Image: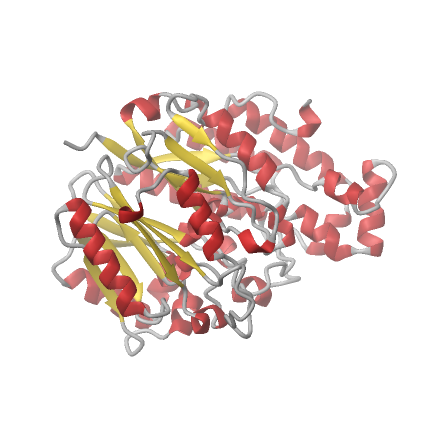
Length: 450
């Protein structure tokens, strides 16, 4: 009999330095909006509104704090000397792109924070966390140490939680976290199938891969995580992402497919050798769960890969509701596009668990290439595991209103990449982060607090 368990969405709080510097090569939205004006306050409030909407639907929510920016350790390691104000001034004058990289608020996209396997899937019956090393993009590669530390603080019990170091810092083991990982199951508390999607093989020098944009996840990284988490090979599937999809802007698999429970929604061009992958998923799901996996394909005729990337249709959150149905939480861009809207209407009209579609405004995130699903890390927890989780980050109405007031006090409503040279931004950011640690009851987690 399966244990009672829940999916808890841990959403990354948007940081005060949310800006559009066009840092993420291969992410078309990020590249297109580079050097435009962002609104950090609106970005935070949009993210909080999405969390509140999901919580009101009955979905369990929690938050992850922003990371400290700028990353002075990295700036100093690259040769910028002097006081903090002088470091920023020199970097802005000599290497503004490096300053932008060290000021990035990219940790808001928590789907890349780690890969998580629930206790029902692991050999030692603990929840396992492996922070992503995020080697493919420099501005994200500085995140793992803080991510590892905050996950250990939020999930402290060694009896219930297993924490692993990020994989070795070599491109052979490039790991992008849960954005390339999907769990499918009959019930959250029962054993599930874990699908790992990769873009290239790290040790095969003949691997051609995509031709335009880099493949960020390696097979070797995915295999290492499966070993670390003690997963059963009979319940694990490794699938190669379509190189053509990557070249079209599908930099992570969560831009082209989404799964929850016994439902897997995907684009026809998502995978290399798609038929064999889907057959393996169906076979292993039936063998483990004793039921049929519901596969829902969106054809290229119905929606092109380009349209999927432009609207982030598949970067929706597919969530189970208390009444047993599922709901698709999609970006408003999918509602505004007639093709994606028609695809959603077709899905809802068919006999499947997806009974509703809701649209959320996360435009500030979308302009940087992150939709609703990018903003959250899914963690399956039993009642005991949830009770052992740090309670200060669990989302409720009180926390929602405190975070809104906090953001309105501390966040700018306009930020241009050139504004990163303003030394006042250092203190503004630290004041905000110092206060949020108190709101979340996390203690001293940032370098400037120690």
